[in-house]
Amino acid sequence: MNTQWHDTHVLGQGAPMDRRVEWHLAHADACGCRPVPATVAAELERRGLPVPAPRDR
Image 1 (cartoon, rainbow, N blue to C red):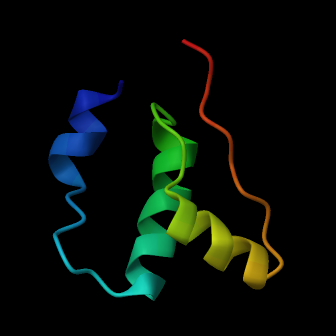
Image 2: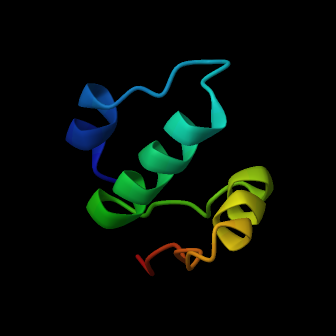
C-alpha cells in the first residue's frame, strides 16, 4: 500500500459519484491496494470505462 498517497488523497465520506470515480481511478494508478467498490465499478461500466483491478502485491 502506498501510504504516502493515501495520506495526501483522502476521499471523504459522502463524496459525490463523480468525485468517487475520479479518486478510485487515481488510486488504481498510484496504489491499487484494493478493488474498486461495486458502486464505482458499476458507474465506470455505465460510462464505458474499464474497471481497474487491484495490483498483485
